[in-house]
Length: 113
DNA sequence: GTACTGACTATTA
DNA sequence: TTAATAGCCAGTA
Image (cartoon, rainbow, N blue to C red):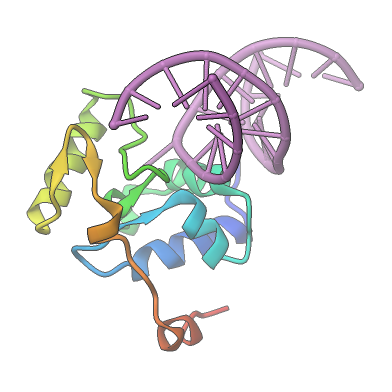
């Protein structure tokens, strides 16, 4: 399939997540102006090319858990990258209360769309 | 067109 | 806290 404008919005937002912080798929969709389309966020990440160098590891599900198949290469890569940024991962889960990104109004105003 | 699937979520038990 | 469920919406067959 071919990436569309919505995918690009998701990618743009992912690129803005600060190191050491995480967001949920649903949150990404909301920020992109696509409320209720968390699955679209997940699909956008799957479609993303490695050459885009997106910090996709900073995206978790609404429970703070990694949504990739447990034990897979990508899963382990995500855990490693999160820990490298100082994020505490226990059993594939992150405490959203401690690490979830809360964009300020100022940050939201800098969004390119 | 139907049916199934998935890097999702909110609700309920 | 985990698990089942129903709703969700694009993509795929």
